Length: 227
Image (cartoon, rainbow, N blue to C red; front, side, top):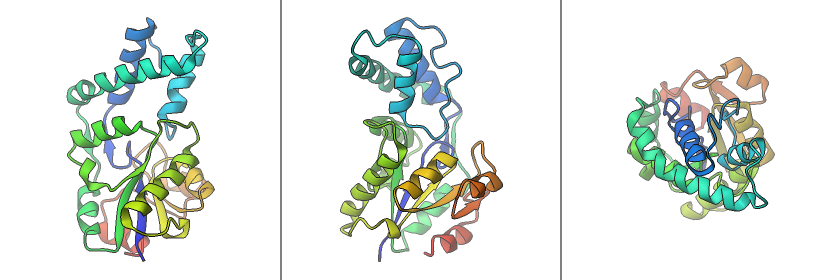
């Protein structure tokens, strides 16, 4: 049996110290002429699709075609993101490299369940030389609903692994209650990692099957994942 693992990106695998937020703000200002466009907008655990559309709605800039504005702004965002990543002093979070290395010796396939646009996820993880560690995933390009990207990630990862997309064989690893809720809505289990804004206690209270402070204890994490 292959264990399918779907990792969130921001504050689970890496910290970019606001590179995505900076690139998004720059894109909205350049395309729509808005100052401080993402001020007051929550990013935690949400999909880029939802965040971009919230900004479009907040500022009344749809001009009758929100999809066209979304395409224009996301294209500029993706152009700005590599520069933002280079300017910010981001890092890979504790234990991530060791865990990914250890997974090579287990019946597990690592993928992604992230609210990032697919191209944005690739830019972020490529910046830290992590993109090639993941066989597939679900991304925040087309839906504001995180559970839908978990389901999509499960299907893509299972296809890459040549196994059935059985939610019971899948565990989502994320740092927010929204990651946990999406995992359960998609029928998978969830490991909460308290490297973001939420504590172990808060993640467990939100329904996480397990929760850890971080991924630094590789043996313990493998035990939780039953690998």
